[in-house]
Image (cartoon, rainbow, N blue to C red):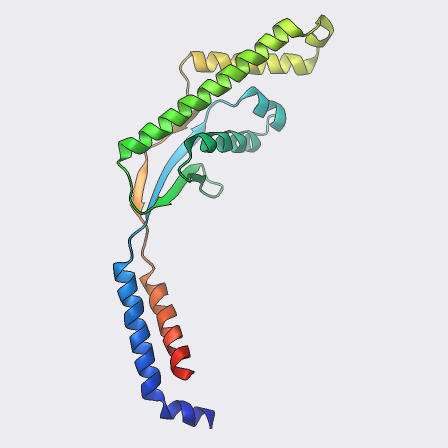
Length: 191
């Protein structure tokens, strides 16, 4: 009986499917496109505190450095999975040079923070510790790490090196929208 009822209403079901499909197609055509902005990176310098916390584990040091960088960059940038790429989505992308400028400014700010932290660490070690503490392995390691950071930044090395910024239009999901529209049309028609 149910199948007979469905067969009797086949034109109503078909009309609902066609109407829902047309609405879905229309929506997919007028929806604003999204753009993926991304930039690859390589971490070059890690702060003394990050080196102390992570104990030479590169993945940990890179993760903490990127989190610190992203807090300075803002604009809802995020790390793309576990890859060495930063990205975000937008409806209205800026010019490449604008993104490059934002990234360089945040990188300079991060380098300045890391440099200040390293020089403060050196000052504490050199002026505030007794001879007994100065001879420990931990203090020696921290002192070497701080000197490496200062020397690297003094020589002009960036904390993070970035590749070119790319802006790509996200693929529209027309097929997905149309399939959902057909399913919705069938459900409404059957009801």
